[in-house]
Every structure is written in C-alpha cells, then in structure tokens.
Image 1 (cartoon, rainbow, N blue to C red):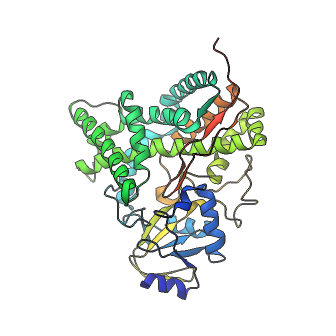
Image 2: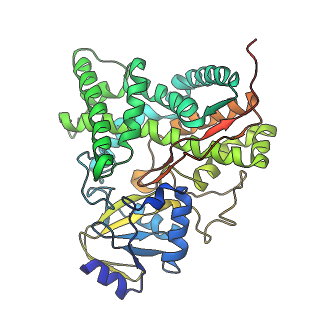
Image 3: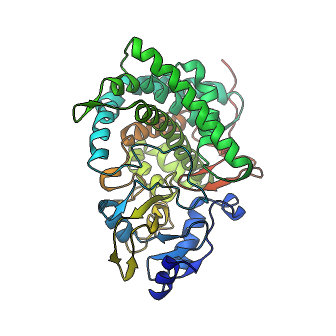
Length: 414
C-alpha cells in the first residue's frame, strides 16, 4: 500500500482497482455507464475515491469539486500529464493541454485567432454545409451509414485539415491515424497501434512545416512559425507538438461527439421528433447531448504541494483524475440527470472543460454539430440504429464508440 492509498483510507474513501487500461468491461459499455457506476458505487457521499490501479490515483466525481480543481491550476497542475491511469507515460506529450499558466496562456493566445466564431462561421460553415449535403445525398440511396466514419469524421477532418494547412488527399490516412492515437495504451498491441498513429501524424506535419518555412499560408503551422513568446520563437518540438495535438483533437472529439449524439437520437424517436419539428432547439440540444455522453471523459492533474481537499490530505506528486463525465450526471447540479432534456437550461456541463483549459475549439465543434444535426434531420427525419453487435466502447481520457450504424428508408437517385 502506498502513502496516497493510506491517506485515502484514512479519509474514509473507497479504494478500488479501477483500471481503465486493462479492464475489458470498459470496452463493453458506454463511457457514461462506467462513469455513473464509479460515482454511485465508489464515490458515495465523498465525491471522490481512490484507484489502486497502475500508479495509483484519486478520482474526483463531484461537479463542485471538479469545478474547483479546474480553476485551481496552482494546486492541480496539468504539466504532469493527463494519462495518469496508464502504467507508463506515453511518449507523446500533448500541448497546450499539459501546460499551466502563464506558459499555457501565452501559447493558447497564439492559437485562439484560428478558432473564433467569426473565422469558423466565415471560413468553414459554407464548406461544412456543402460537404454534409454531399454525404447525405450519397448515403440516402443506400439506406444505411455509420454516423462516425461516413458522416462525422469526413466533415471534422475536412475542416481541421483546412485550418492546419494539410492536403485533403491525406484525409483517409490521417483519420485512421487519429483513431489509433486516441487510445494511448502502454501495453501490447494497443501500444504499437497508438505509437504508429502518433508517428504517422508527426511525419505529415514535419513535411508541412518544412514547406511553410519556405512559403507561409493562412494556417496554424505558419502562424506558429512566426509566433513569438516573450520575444522568442517557439522551438521546433513545441511547434510540431501543437500541430499534431491540434489536428488530432479537432478530428477526434467532434466526430466522436456526433457519434454519441446520433446514437441517442436514433435510440429515442421522441428526441428526434423534437429536432425535426423544432430545429431552433438544436443549439440548446447540443449542450444537453454534450452533457449526457461526452467524448471528454476526464482530465489528469498532479498535486503540486501539501493541501487539504474536502477532508482528504493531498501531497505533492499525488495523481488526481477529474472524472467530468460523472460530474455531468451529478444530481446536486442537474435535475433528473439521467434523462435527456433537449431544452435543459441552465446547463453547466463540464464537457468543454473549465478554468484556463476550457476547450479552445468549442466554436468549431459546435458549428460542426449544428450543421450535421440541421442538414441530416432536414433530409432524413426518420432513422434507427442498425446492428450494434460488433460495436465496442472506450473509456479513457476521451470516450468513444467504434461505430454508430444508422438505418433509414433508402431514397432513389433522381
């Protein structure tokens, strides 16, 4: 028993072997089911518990406690990494997520102009609508499609490729690499697959950055090459890391989130009818769908100094997982938290983070989600889930489904 585990027991916390990396049960149920189980069975009235798996870590499930930790970056640091449940630390260090202010604030300011509502709506909205309609026209003749790989991923990839200055011809290979990179296991074949995804994306951006050093463009790699922080240029590794992470996050989170949205809408006709009959509810519906099943499952923090946190003695070096997906079902904050209410207001979900690390790409993600929901339900108001027997789930820093098969009445080619 390590010292952190003993302090957890002394505080009356549950101590369990909660192993996201190796326990197969997390691949057989939705991430929200796993998070809800952890909150109900392990947190009890404490709002947190301790996992003895891997290197050991505290797991916080309370909405109020997570909100407090997200804002208190001086005590709960991001520098130590988010993948605290793994047996080894992955070789790739995603930036700017694994940075604290003031460094994080300075780097974030370099990226922010590429994700403003004005840029997203002005540069990408028209393309998103056109591509969505093109995909819908193609799949409606078939009567089926996968909401992730055939609908959401192509759109999220196209928009992110544009912002990152990547050729559309690389979309297929990079999308597959993003899928591989999004499961950062440190054991067995999963580790090899993850590393292959990381290096595929890395090699693409090494080539792009080499071209941008010769000729700039209106994209993130060019801006990072010209950027100065405290009067100094960014080092090559930081630029490469920011490009790789920005691309992967832009593709993975948006497409995964849309997969979850279509899963629930296909499962619940009454929700689908609300969107079809009142498309004006879609912006509010997006927040509720984000709350109910989020691709952003948790975030890791490392304690920087000795402190008492809600009756638990923390020490420098302690690992803390903020299980935001559980916080999104906290009954102390959300009335009827296990019910989808597309008109829920207010909706202080934590799926987009909080504090200095609130999602920088939220406007882009919302635009993609709104475009898909509007155009799809205008063209295909009635659909249902297909064969789910081979679908697997993942609960890690991000959660996902391997597929969301949809079926609907095929429409003949005119």
